Length: 558
Image (cartoon, rainbow, N blue to C red; front, side, top):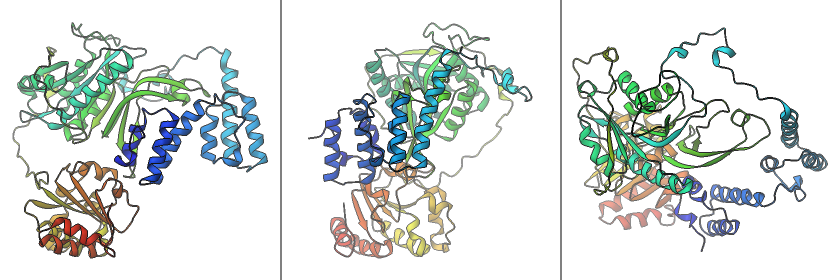
């Protein structure tokens, strides 16, 4: 049996699961299991690339067996990164010229030759001192030079993972609980991997937030830092940013204008920071990371910590070399295509540090942990000065907007996607009719319906608004039954419904991404499948309904 069953994971989930498997024999067993099971092209490619990585590691850069005639250009690009001798590369270049003679392949080999040659030529030169932005561009204004917090740190000390625990109207948000649980998991593994004893630090800012300190500790925090003031009852950009940044620099030594000493910590800044990807959390995360002169990965749904090998000369300081950066927080987020994940890394430059490594987390990405009443932790009160000038804008009155449609409490959700395009109104009518067959059910839509140019009749138009959108920028739901009609399965949408107990997908495309994470996949036109499903559900037997639409001529199930 392989160490893991690839059939239990979607392609997006398989990558992180494989990161701890380094044995080629185990990887080949996983590959065989995938081929004998679902045999997904993307999964096979992912496993094969992992096998190639560790197979190449064992070859110690030996190019004797490399035949460019049997290699794709991408294969050559991967291979040359591990070749350190110019003579070996020149032999490979000659072999390529005598075989396929591909310009793109030759450019890759020649670039590696040039990089190594340049590195050797520069080996005797003294290191060039880094220039500041105003030195590099004296013709430009540099107003940020005078900002108190914008001050890059070089070779600083960093520890701990900080979690901003957002509260609203006195209650702590579930996403704050999710982040504390994930942070506890990450730091426990981090301490084991690196032999450290770093901590999870929860941050509470607001009015009457001290009541949440005990819960933060029970959920995983080792330290809770609080800032209490009745003027902080409502989120304000200026004071919240200044307070968090002062907490982050408290006790450190980042340069001119050092903060007061702190008995509970002595590092310059946090190693990692997490914020919720809520409206307020997105604002605060961007402002804080800018003030601390670092970077931000927004709207993340996956996190893990491991070393990273980087060959980018901007990061290594010299071309043609590969450098291992340790303890890097890998932050996964759906990319702009909607079908893949991008992994964002916040890595130092040779002459300046990028810390804290920070990201905002999409609500619903992680499980809320079970509280541990026996956990012990420390509560620290921030006692800095709050400037009255931070409250230049005063809220004199406000209205609470209608929260709209809440899909989270339904046992069944019928979601409609772009597959309704042939007859948008009829497609929505079928979705509404199917939802009406259940007692606790409602209709949701994808972002494509909300932002598309579909024309709907008045009787269904109310079901197509943004308040019913499911996904990364909409609602995150976990019904007992989720029926996805005409939905391709973009990662942003997957984030919103992946925790559903049973997922039934209907799509004309047998290779639609949603098939990878559906319990039942029905290949067919929703205009033909939904009427049969409605009739079968009305008969009172859902299993009979699924069998009816999955019968020959009606589609197929996974």
